[in-house]
Amino acid sequence: MIYNEKFTLLTFYKFVDVANPKDEVEKHLRFCKDIWMKGRIYIGSEGISSTVTCNEGQLQAYKMYLDSHELFNNPEDFDIKSCKVDSHKFPRMAVKHREEIVALWKKYSKEEIEEAWNRMEIDEFKDLIDNGNPDDYIILDMRNNHEYKLGHFKNAIPANTMNFRELENEIEDYKKQFWDKKVISYCTGWIRCEKSTVMLQKAWLKNTYQLDGWVVKYINTYNDGNWEGNLYVFDDRVSDFVWDNDTHTTIWECNYTGKKTDNCENCRYSHCNARLIADKKEYKNHFGFCSRECADKAIASGHVKHVDFDSMHYKNERARIKVKPELEESIMNKIKTHLEEKLEWVEFNHKLSQKEDVIID
Image (spheres, rainbow, N blue to C red):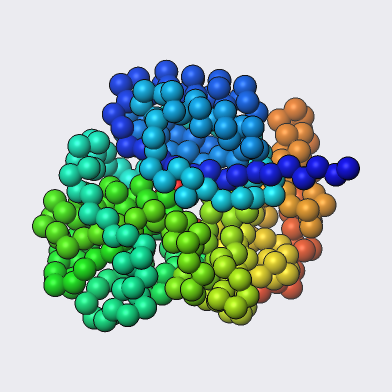
């Protein structure tokens, strides 16, 4: 008999004042490793942010652990924001201390977050998109640009802000443009919206809302085409297909050809690592580099990430140099020759790296 194990992708956060976050990291990591769960969790003085995959037994054990925790119990929409997956989506379990559970360069207390709460339920949001007048509201996507490009709500506009310093610079323009409109912000994990709403309301943009339950709650509830494209996710899937063939739309274009695609990859030049929306075949044809700049820098440095379609293991070759420095010239020539041969006839749409200046994770 074949047993098909069921897995759950669980994403939640909780803003709560944590006096000793490093102690909580150690205890949390020990428990998660004990039950063989996999994922990525950040704990800081402002709370916890967790994205993990677990089988049924691990899920129940983790629920019990959180229920008994004096700080992390009762996170909102714990079940609604989960989804079923076919396997673990992370290679390992990592629990890390980070002062901000989302890196936006500004911390707010639990009280400040709660005072700014102004949430719009998903049914009201749906009605606004389906029946509302677009001149009366703005849907503001608070995520990174590559996430927006891969998929977003109908009529949404990108905030084009990578950190709070940029948001502060935009606020005066927001006030001029949106002073008489409802401003509904959303993001993948809601944390950015919680924090950005504090800043917007402190700047007297009081008609500002956060989408309740963020993207996942909406797409888990409705299959209506109001989300366009795929959803960028922070696990091994990267690009998650939304809804079905009748309601799904592909909205963005391949980095190399301009043709529509939902596929997402990374630039192979290690110091770039840009997220690319790129057709799989074209990604391979361009040997995984986002631009001519990154291809040239990879040839010069050998800092290239391994992929299945490339026979050379660059990390291993660079490790040989550390052991035998006298081989450096011959190894680097080997890497250079290999890459030059693969890239000899390749043309790139972009001269410069496509990496965003600051990535919010």
